[in-house]
Amino acid sequence: MTYPFQLIPMATLKENGVAANSWKIHEHLGTHTDAPNHFIENQKSLDQIALEDLIVPVVVIDISDKASKNRDAELTVDDIKTFESQYGKIPDHSCVMMYSGWEAHLKDPMFVGLDSQQVKHYPGFSSAAIQFLLTQRSIAGIGVDDLSIDPGIDEKYTGHKMLFAAGKWAVECVANLSNIPKTGATIIVGAPKVGKATGGFSRIIAVW
Image (cartoon, rainbow, N blue to C red; front, side, top):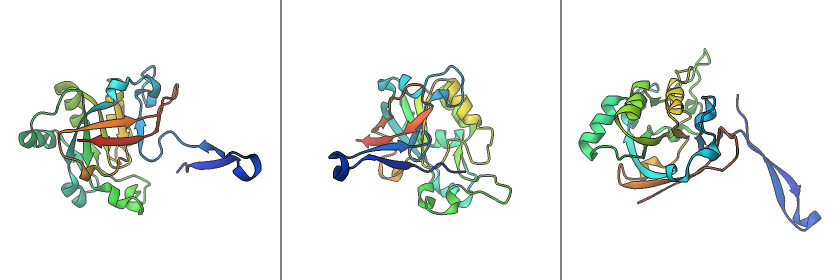
């Protein structure tokens, strides 16, 4: 099931002398931020995420090679440790991005990867990796270049629940992760400040 964006004209230059539209949009559409209240009751909504938690160092862990061979590939604790052996320890208060190369499938059915049983197939963080980042590292949030931080086959959204119970955020469907350095950049998450929102479409910028 999809929830397409709708732009509905409210006024036009020809008829009203001013142009304006209303939007009908699902909070979790396109490149977007997930707030902790997306899955956890009484956790922070999107507007309650502090600004200083949305402008943070970013690292990019590349699992595109194994994802090209296995659409259910996961970013694991071993992937994190291998990354750190090459690039150093993940900085405190950072965002850890998973790059799977999945944006290449954006316009074909493989992006969602539904099988005959309507089970989704795309890469994500393993629950063990999320637990490691929450307990052994100090992160602000995590992100992915596909639909979900959880692998598509995880229909219980295990990683979401773990991450959001800890009050962290996630960004999903992030483009161009292959264009930023593996470490040394800063990410700016332009999430809308909407009261009680569980998420919202976002403009995400990396600078270095």
